[in-house]
Amino acid sequence: MFSKASYNNIVFKGYSTDYQTADSLKRMVEDGIAILEVGPALTFALREGLFALSYMENELFKYAADVEISNFIEVLDKAMIKNPSNWRKHYHGAGSKIKYARKYSYSDRSRYYFPTEEVIYAQNILIKNMKSVEIPLTLINQFMPIQYNKIRNGLLRNDPEELIKDWVVNCIDEYIYASTPSEVSKQVI
Image (tube, rainbow, N blue to C red; front, top):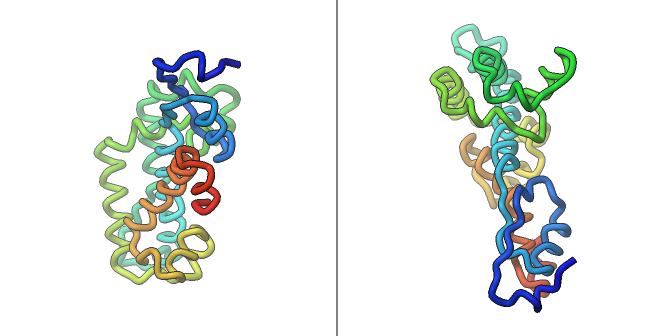
């Protein structure tokens, strides 16, 4: 352990602080870590939000013959299988374990496939479909309960893009808490 008083002219960076609890991040800041780097946690949250929206899309449109369903989850996985260079070194084990990791690993590698043509297309279809209806609050409650509460309290619009953004913001909220002075932070979380 170091004393921040001993290093007044040095700024410390917490490298890869993803997936820490809000209190752990807060202690890092109090110990003198001035920069809390975050990476995969943000794209992990983005992927979670897109998956939640995709589950809702399937519930709403799976029997609608006139609607092209995005199949976002499957399209993303196929893009990853087609070009495994961004995940092969990171996921190990039997086929089912690797398949699970492609979807849900904290070492989120799906972010490298978001810019691919087929994933962009699926995401656009997903957003278009979900904008074409008012998403039932019961589905939002099932798949995005935090956003459901925000909608009910008038803090968030029932809009697919807003739902996804807010899902990612929940990840960022822990960093805001960590960097807020202690007397204020008790009110933030």
